[in-house]
Image (cartoon, helix red, strand yellow):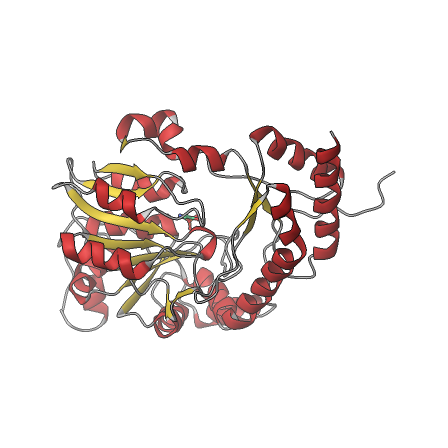
Length: 381
Ligand SMILES: *Cc1c(COP(=O)(O)O)cnc(C)c1O
């Protein structure tokens, strides 16, 4: 008979204030986008990151699509990115006819390997997308130099990285354009939501137009023109006010939420470091760079062991999951991309497993005990 409650893999954290702000937005009567709460959120993120401009979107996917439109991606353009990422990183550029060039990640942190990045640059390279896996970045100083030297635009897919920094500088502030996600699986959430961070002023005007269905409606609302018209291609990328009101409650507590997640991450790290002696790989604890406790993963010794581990954890009522199927191995991705050999991506993605990590009294000790038991059990097999 089971006596323990299931520890689910994810549980969205609610601050309790969301409903208060949603109620206020309801009272204010503006439900479409770019109202009181959208302004509050954009300003909050702008200050937090130290950005030139922040535009809320309805997802990180939407923000990435805006990036592809802003860069005027066209067939023939190449965009360097990891294959080990969420599908939207690539899809946004494919929608414009661009070609993803998949590069391998480095085993130490599963972020793009900068030596491979440099070797993959061609005359057609338009942009490099850094995906901050698990909320940790690669060497952003060196990557910025590579981009500057080759006249290539640096983009950050910072979907997982709100609140993380590289040498004291916030992630999201390095790219000419950077994208965040507020999907319920991320640290700061509103169900579905995202933001486009603009650090190069030259993109601001056109970003407003692209986000408002290709019109200069933003200028109209701000009283800069007396009517608004069709100015460029675009789509509808803005979230409604109810979502922004929800998000604002979360953003107000970003420091508390981040430090609680980091402390769970640290507990996992400290209690599970001994696994290294068993040939299991843990990401090193960063010394200079600050993470945001977004996700905690283990690299087991083989794919069979990973699958068995998930099974054993399930028997102990702890849900663990893995991701991603590398994009270059998917049927669609393999046909529309360029890549050479990606040994780390292929090797590690089969062996990676993520442990539950959420606030609201997650029974971390029970998860750790289950990991210890499952590993011992697997070692005895
Ligand atoms: C979650 C995630 C996305 C997509 O975010 P949405 O807000 O769901 O569109 C994109 N890239 C990465 C790396 C992600 O983790």
